Length: 325
Ligand code: SF4
Image (cartoon, rainbow, N blue to C red; front, side, top):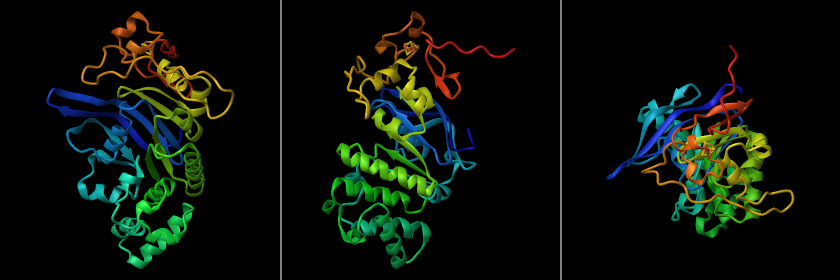
């Protein structure tokens, strides 16, 4: 893999609650290369959004980062002071939130909201910012006359495109996209994802793509990490994951979604629910739901190991490959 642009190393995040700390992200490590789309998938509550917000230091208390490093272009984001962090965010990594209606200010025009980002970070005049805002809207396929519209005057798809235009305003080398199309119907969802893919080819940015929709992720990601109960349980190239998912949880996730292409098949899903993170199961956290659990799975936590070139899995079904003597 080429030199990583983003490198998350052993990240740990806890929520401090009256009944004790809850570890929502537990010792997670992965890299994202320049120009790569890295997908993070898992059920709701598995730690995807917590991880992304923690990496940008946007998590409010009672969440605390209790360990790890997040490196971007040679700087540890977790070690930056507030001034460096304010200049870093949006210029280097921008964020597309889950719900455009919540991300946009309802009492400001979309033009004012795009201009705010440009003026604050680049110190240009309002007329220069407006010119750039018009270009960004056109880039997203929205007429520049819409700069004067308020969010409620736009469709859901247009609002999400405005949020993406704001994220692109400073031409960052990386965007975090947290469920960017979840609230939209499937046709608009596909249109927006294809537009993002075309913009990525044109502008060359990397994406950390977060979703619980594995079929969408398989279509748009280069590599994918699967999170379960705060732990990374599988890490693989998207094609490898599609053709040969190894972890029983990954296989369960894949059987829970209809494939975007190919013959229709029966959806099976995963038995049970994710664990109560205040008392996660011992051993493999997936063992109460796993149909392939071994006796040792109740007590021994599997480590994430490389089981094939480019494929890492945390599961006792896959023994550690023998190392050369
Ligand atoms: Fe299932 Fe055991 Fe693998 Fe966990 S380690 S996924 S319980 S087989």
